[in-house]
Image (tube, rainbow, N blue to C red):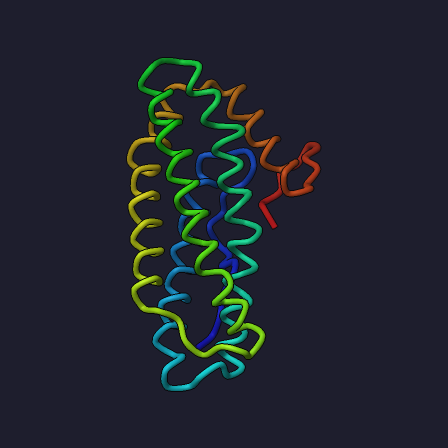
Length: 183
């Protein structure tokens, strides 16, 4: 089955926080693809070593990096945009609402993945997997087609620099002189 949590090569750094947000979407899509493969894998192979490894990788990603991604948006990008105008405030509210909905769906999926990771469960409802993936896909499309372009248009270079520093800090990375890519 093979699992890749953080594919290299996206090249985004904290100097380019909006590109980092977009690159994170690529990693989320890879994790959702692994989730779909896991769902197809389980009926035939059960909670074998590949299934357990895939479940652990998905859990690790969504319990850590995906949460930081939402924090980046909710604590760094959206408040700065919301100060600009009503359109940006409405977008910020919508995205925060979608984050809450995604978190609720994750709470339904997470215990199933924990069971698979522990070798105690070998079933995952295909409908739940499809619902989670569909909600994430729609959400990322909104962010890529509206949020990121709006942020590029309206945020200043200084605001983007500060956002990048905040993102680095959330990940425990010190940015002094040279910029580092996320871990």
